[in-house]
Length: 240
Image (tube, rainbow, N blue to C red; front, side, top):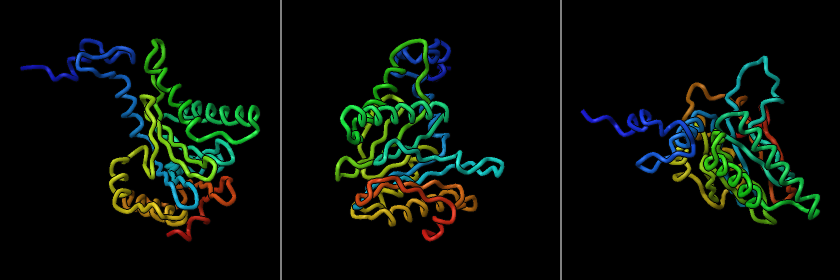
């Protein structure tokens, strides 16, 4: 009886380092890290007619934890927000790197950094950890949404260091199921309020009886004010 290819790769040790290709052309540690991301809590990002928004599931419901310490959507700069899925400690390092890039740009050029500049730098950093020995890949996918001038932008970088621009997308648990719903219901002329309603509707459909407004962190940047606005708890109830 022939041994399955995945088992053969494990026996031969091709899954012991992120820098060793298996005979069928895979970096197995990178693929394992991608599975880690799909265990993380979900976030949905939208490009809207009037800005960008991320609807994120914090998942943490322990009443002993202070609500202010569990933001799922983080501020990179006034005009830019960021969510991650995967290992939280890895995510924190990537978030701080993005914030540093934004701060350095303001000091050097006295202006806001372009959204794609940030995601490209983060993607380059993630790619390096798939190429050099002695370190494992980052176990986190990154979603960055913001304004490049008057243009709302949304980018996602995966484990490998690739990044793409999206109208709308999802990362984390059930991402493929969420994307199928987005393909059906998303419209490019949506405003931020419509996107928030759609995001919560999708989460309600997936989570069923576990759906609870208190577990969501919603943040947006609109074209008028160009600053992060956050919606939590009671502020989300009007979107039911």
